[in-house]
Image (cartoon, rainbow, N blue to C red):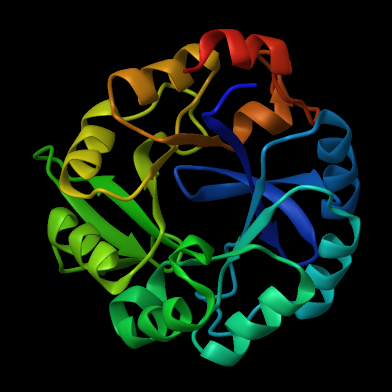
Length: 253
């Protein structure tokens, strides 16, 4: 069995699943419950659900939908989107999710991370950073589905996330999102070098070769993708899929 986790990231918009390209133009993928059932059969390592409209709309998680999802899933799951209070964190864990992903709230309410870690432990709290390249090639952080630019520097922020107690950090390259053009290895290396917690590479994966590169060249501890697991072929036909376990075990450390 491979030790490198390979994680589908599924985007919630309303009651459905969508996939974006560079955080724009969401395309409807299907019903999240049906997708979970298929991923159950494929024995995926874990699933991450991100509600991409909760924070921009100023609302909390859709707990009814999350309860339905949790009732079907046989693998560990994480959820992020619209989380601003400890009560919401508690409700998500009570539904059966193993991890909570915090992005925008880390900038506005870092105490939320401290409190959640104190109760549930670092292994249950995941920091997420959405990173965009500027025209000059520098990295800048954003939140609210890419709509809000954050002034803090990348290294400063990920180091702070580690200090606050998160157990791992998802690094999401906005410019690679949905493009299947390969991970931003430079970005992954910079974050991996700055922190000692596991780094999850996200944004741009097109296949197992990219997974291998993220681990061996970028220093990632786990790999995540969206389009790779919901589209097939040059015309991006919708089909839930996952690499063969034997192939992952052979190729990944």
